[in-house]
Length: 269
Length: 257
Ligand SMILES: Nc1ncnc2c1ncn2[C@@H]1O[C@H](COP(=O)(O)OP(=O)(O)OP(=O)(O)O)[C@@H](O)[C@H]1O
Ligand SMILES: [Mg+2]
Image (cartoon, each protein chain N blue to C red):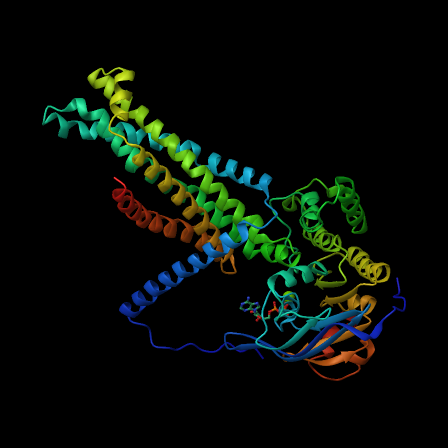
């Protein structure tokens, strides 16, 4: 008979519970690492599912496009507006375009894109694969020899790794546009002057650092979303947890990677 | 339709299970299972809800790993072979899930094509269409070809799930409650389908069910899972010729007032 064993263990203390959840988190990061290794092992083997990759790129782009456009623009306008007073103090408002573009290109564009994509794309990948796991669709693929890891995970990770850098570049220009509109309304700077000043302080290294950040963020969001969904627990609760876990973990990793990449880019200057 | 005598080769076990154990946490689900599935036979597995029937076929297909014991499928030790060999083996085994497990994001046609497109390299469009139409016809659902799974009824989903498994012409079929929740007429059709698959393709099948009519019409042998072991195995009549209180209710509930 299947009797339910009573679980009258003493309530764990608050401290030991916190310790458990921290060690769970690091255990999870280790599993994500193993998942990454599996990705690189499987991604090179056929079939390549090009059609599915294109479809996933489209999904990724479309899902976050409106929100990203809006946020990018607003960030550009607000950042310019808020920076002005501190420059006016030194009589240096003419530096505004340079300041704005450095901030946007080097830091804001990839980060803003990544955070929004983590919320929109990462969570929906987590939920989608999570519900496929819970309803045994992934098992069904597994037992029919159709390689679900390739079809579901590899395609999505490739898609986010391609799409998020593109979106980040797009956000950079939209934010610059926001900055330009604000500067031209207040200081009357022309478009050509603004752009000249904006791109003057940027070096090739800055551009590459920004792009590689976006690529790493894209990969992270894709792999974490897939990891959470692919390993979701049974039950409806599992789907919600997967979606939530995808966002939280991806954001955490994005911040860590941001710090690391800024450090590394510093060595090349 | 009464079942015809099947061609069963009892010297050839396509599935051979010895001393199989599996537990989840501190609940021992399977406690030393021995089971043979012979070439060409339909074996019905009965047992109360939660006794581990679904777990058993998941172990056979390598979705779960055994804690102890051996599972040999078509001559391969499922727990010992490599991932690649397991994938190759799985194509030869059909697995129809208890809850259908249709791919939500794909139409019925795409669901059925999926295993073909991904397993048979170089298959032509015409061949795919032919296969899709023939399995759809076999389960009597040709009209649903362009529908999404969410638009189908539970029974229709179940039949599409079976069709998707049949499309690869598996040597072993595992049906997890194929008739659960279906109307009597569809049940009869499914039973006939299971028998036709056996006869036409010489497939060996494991049929999990609570439906004794299905068990009687399709099964060459019946195995009853009691307390984590197959304690009663034999023909339908042999298994139910007992006063065991764990067995009798199955029969009484299905066939008497
Ligand atoms: N992945 C899993 N993790 C933990 N426990 C599981 C898992 N799969 C099954 N179980 C447990 O194993 C037991 C047997 O489950 P199984 O699904 O095989 O039952 P069943 O015999 O198919 O029942 P039913 O007739 O209701 O389908 C159940 O108690 C279930 O809780
Ligand atoms: Mg079951």
